[in-house]
Image 1: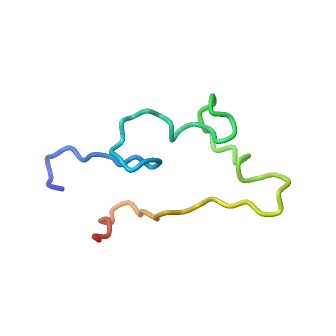
Image 2 (image 1 turned 90 degrees about the vertical axis):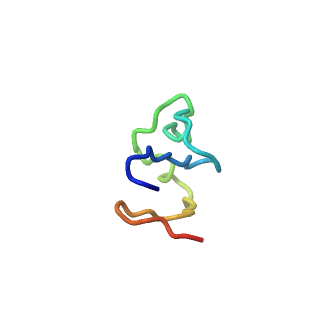
Image 3 (image 1 turned 30 degrees about the vertical axis):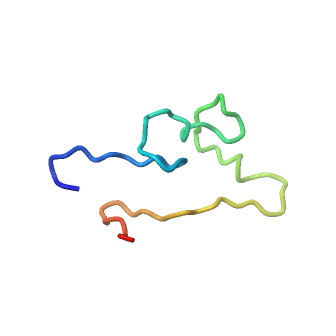
Length: 66
């Protein structure tokens, strides 16, 4: 994007621009709670836990063109 124009953030949950709904800030275990990075969603008694990773972004690098 050009400098001087407002850059639109992309939603991390849905294929759309960010609408500042706050859904991405909610706890996966308790949707009434704002995530505080307690890590309870990945810790526990299960043998194997995973988080899907769709993409890795590094600040300061341009997104890859497809």
